[in-house]
Image (tube, rainbow, N blue to C red):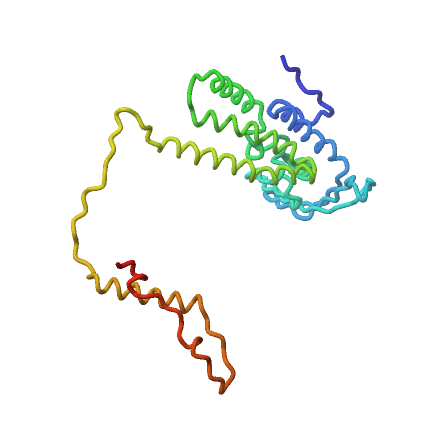
Length: 270
């Protein structure tokens, strides 16, 4: 049986997160929560419904292989009636869990729980157990469900996203491999479709021959011969270009008469 995660603070945010998030996401959220102490907030506007805060965040950033504490400023806006929070760092859009600045703003607004809109189902324990059930169903061939396969793929891709977002190098590896994986899937799909369209040959297969051709109206023999002559003359002009002669020069007789085979041989006539 899985034990409950260790709580490092008495924050209601941490207690709530420990009961809904998977272990890996909870640890990441816990790190953000611990960094609240490095944030210095200043209230810019507060009318009881909307709150605007400027937060100076002291962050430990690696610069040229050396970690330095750098102060950054972010602006937070909180809608206290709709439980909406937005930060200029845009962390939630990439990590899918609230940043330290948002948690500070929620505290100032008197909100002690993570709003439901900011809890993504794919990061929750409930989704993990649901996936485990779907995976069991797929592995044991109990049902051929598109929904189950979708859930199974999403679960594995979330692991890739979680690891791939840890660093720039890992991110680049994921981005480079996605087109290769997509190409394999497309090739496999096309190969499967091609094999399904193939008609197997057997003892019961029937060979359908072309119907007998009826004599139709068309060009006569003389017109065919004239057309062939024109094509040969055109081809001869393209293959052989006569050299340009100086002005006033009279070519020899043998150069004025191109070598032409007898017409009956060209046309294959006796």
